[in-house]
Image 1 (cartoon, one colour):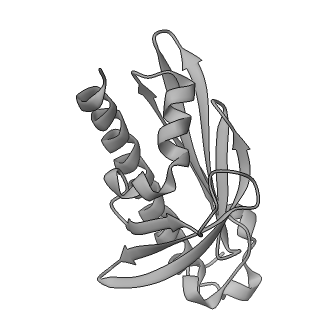
Image 2 (image 1 turned 135 degrees about the vertical axis):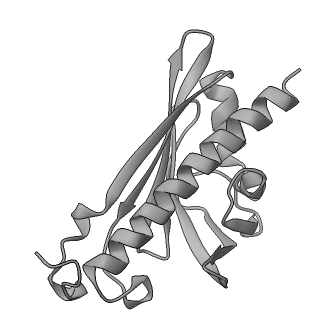
Length: 160
């Protein structure tokens, strides 16, 4: 299979990843931090100006908007919460194209936080070849690693 294979022949399920980190906080505390989507810019290197729609919060069906950036470009996204299980999991779908999922598993005196990304469907905004999609997935995986590290550092610096 060529890395320049046309996007129309690519299976979206080939583009997914999970990154994890142990963080010195309880699962419920991490859930509260991550599900407070306006705070995501504290940790994410690519997201800013994230806000729930008026009257919405971290519950299934809620919508929020945010600004994203990559390679010198910025754009606004619309996301919908698809899972909200306090202390356990929080997930949202961005523009109907990708799903981000956070899960939390107690380990010792902290939590293993997992951040997963899954391509749900092809869209021209993502690129036009398998190589474009692979580059996007790899970029987002590096972003997830940076986010997890920044979240762990924030928790360490801001815990009572």
